[in-house]
Image 1: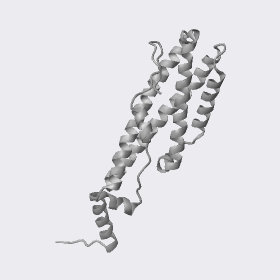
Image 2 (image 1 turned 30 degrees about the horizontal axis):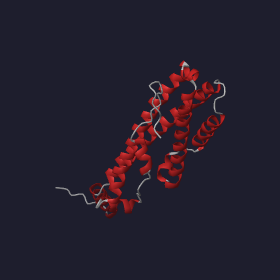
Image 3 (image 1 turned 90 degrees about the vertical axis):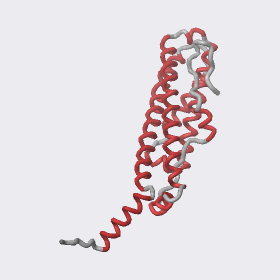
Image 4 (image 1 turned 180 degrees about the horizontal axis):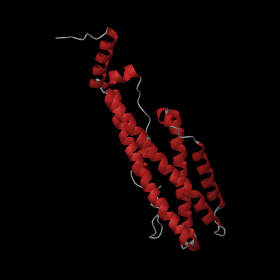
Length: 206
């Protein structure tokens, strides 16, 4: 019967693999992939919203005497939000993540303001193109809410593993750190999708 002895380096590699697999290494790998996938979907929905805004602004511009300040705020907020390069590395940088979140939050606020102001313009509300854009924005805001909540859950699961024993030992050895997520205030705000359809007299969430 022949026995094959592992070289010390090989034996150590096998030992390390067994230790890591039992201390959450695989959990970190799958969790990281889930976070990346969830974040990509968040970005897709934010981009969808950004792509709808120029058409909305153009339709609103055609309305006589519409508040120019509100339109300017929307255009500027969109420009700021889209100027931030949302690279995959952004989710590992709390400061950059916060800046991105604030820019997107401001865009959502001024967009809600524009739609609220439109209540004062009956001809604009009756415009079919405007109503179609409202419906598309409502659907997009709902998708953003779902995507962000999935991201929050994925990050929460990952961060629990980073902080919990014994997986926290693997995190320390491998350099895994907690990842930033949406703030508590933001989570409260996104727990209810903003209402964009003014046909029934509703107003957007503040």
